[in-house]
Image 1 (cartoon, helix red, strand yellow):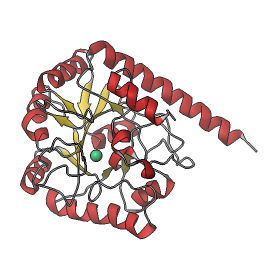
Image 2 (image 1 turned 45 degrees about the horizontal axis):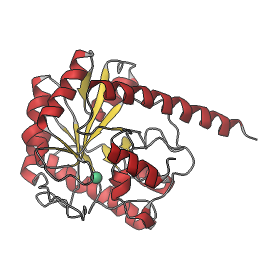
Image 3 (image 1 turned 90 degrees about the vertical axis):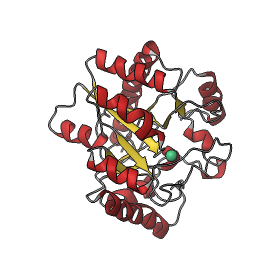
Length: 283
Ligand SMILES: [Zn+2]
């Protein structure tokens, strides 16, 4: 795994797809993954947070609506269709995910409905929004350096879900899961799911780890809570259905950088499988 300070520094310089989320996580809570869960090579999934006009963006979470529209247009030109992770996993099970790319929006910012949805609709794309079940209608108070951003309200989440957008769980209180006691992991995964199922009026099958932070107990709690899949960020020994790696997309990402990131995803995927094979062959 990348040196943390190195990856934060290079993320600021804009030359890596190392996620800003690792920098947001308090140092004491950063933890590497444990042994692997069953899985295969990973689908390509992009990770967004906020689509908005923002002057201050210390965590590099925001993509301007203009840039976002360019990125989506680029995917479309390349013959790719952006879909929710729910749809991606279904298509994948039937071997039909070739031209698909997963689009994910963490934290459930209100600007998803305002800016991202109209652009996605124009191309017939779908996406997943991972919302913090107990903070709907509030703001991102967990990001101490700000800026404060409004989160989707209960009503907005209900409307998005009934319009076909996948709503997934981002836990409770935007807390990192690694290191939490087993009963708290149970509450984070089960209770957030129960709350959201009430709001969306149907099953919630996707989970996304706050800060992308996952270890084996967290991944197992998510599976035991009945989710179908979970999104992480980095490739790790846990990479698989309950720790899907994702590619961070920022405001500086134009066509060639997105192409490079896709190549890097494939490369990391190959390295992860190679390491896994080597580990499994060990006596
Ligand atoms: Zn988050």
